[in-house]
Image (cartoon, rainbow, N blue to C red):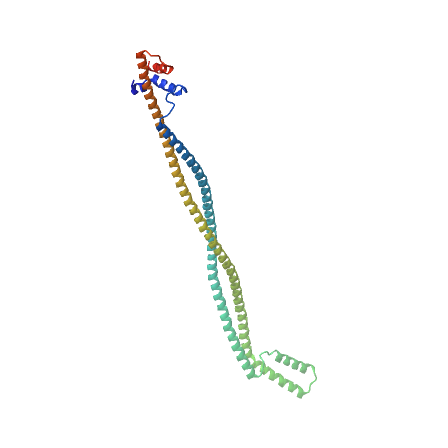
Amino acid sequence: MSNKLCAANPENERVLSHIIQQPHHNPFKQAPRIVSVLMDQISDLREQAVKIREDISSLKTKLHGIYDKKEEWYAKKDEIRSAVNDLITEVKKIKSQLDRSKEAKESIRMQRDDYNSKTRALIDSFKKLAVEKRSMESKLGIRSDTSYLKQQISKMETKIETEALSFKEEKKIMTRVNEIKKKLKESSVLADFEKKMDSLSSEINTIRKKGDEEHQKLIEFIAAEKDNYSKFIELSKKINTLKKLQREAFENFKALKDEFLGTNDVLQEKLIESSKIFGTVRQQREKIARDKRQNVLKTLEQKTREVEEKLKNKKKLTTEDLIVFQGKT
């Protein structure tokens, strides 16, 4: 009986399975040496597979940890960047205020200096008039303040009207009154000086007041500018500090990303290696199954020939021979 006939006969398959399953009558229970070698190889591969599965599990755990840390640093980097952008917006706002303050401050300073310049010019004019006035007073022999002269005239005229004076005394007083009145008439030129000086004094006070107001504005602007400048410096320092932290966060993120990719590459290699091992194990098992099957088929064919020979010689058949004979028929 050929291998082809045995493989094609379903009953032969049944007999084959039956023979293999018999613990006491299975003549094929001892595997050929090649099968034993393959089984040893499978055992070694299984050990390798167990080690690789442990490595894969460890790598996955490590990968999850790296990923979580990587995302934490990425979120921190974005958080810091958002804070930096907010501070930059605030700094730009303060810078704009400082620029406008500088322009306004310069305008106020120029206005103040202009008032101060006009005030000095008016004071110089006032001093010049004062010198001219004193020169005129010296020339006339009178003071610019003529109120005392008017008081003298009033007193003398009252004395003439109220007292019983002799003709000589009255004439003397009248002469003095006329002299004083003459001085009053001459002092009219001094009144012009006084009028001009009063006008200058009033103008000086007005312009000086405006200059003081502009100076006060300037002081307030400088104080506000100083406060804004302090804020500008403080925010700039914060921005520099945060940018440094942002760079550190990015470097940490990048390092973890590289580590993640490297670990993932190792994991993929392990997965490929695991797949190859399981593929090899599957191939070895299939080979073992084929070798066993071929060995059993050969043995069955040999037993079949022996049974046929026994039948031909009319020898007694064993139970095993009967099983083989049933498969044949």
